[in-house]
Length: 184
Image (tube, rainbow, N blue to C red):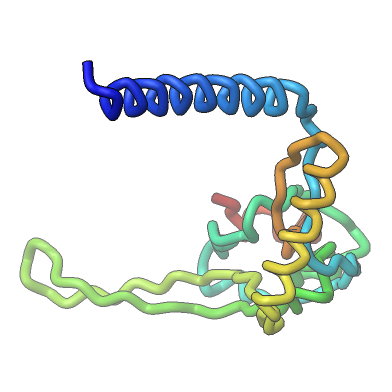
């Protein structure tokens, strides 16, 4: 064998040895990390707001919109202190990210039935929607980076998520209107 071939084989074997050592060290470091739990990144200012909407029972059965917010805890109860033909929503939300609003609206839908007649149907809907507050995405990214690096220095890895927009929605109606509201 030529001298250059022996040198190349030695360099190759040395590289394999160093890669093996590096992989072992990386595996040992990774296995020493612990789970740090869930971390919330971003500003959280939880507030509770009571919203009310008037409904007209003669418009039909009111449907509470299925877009109710975003993994919030929901509950619906009757309460005699709520005036008749009123739906009261007690919303706990993150004021830094979201401002809740409620709207009662009657939507109409037209379609042609099997006889060729145009049929108009009305859908009374109660919707909880919100005004989204502008977020500084770069600020959130840098806060996430700082938290991630801090966790790594302490030997842990965590789950990171943004704070909730809406934490809970409690829907209160007068017992008289219980048949006028449908929750889906």
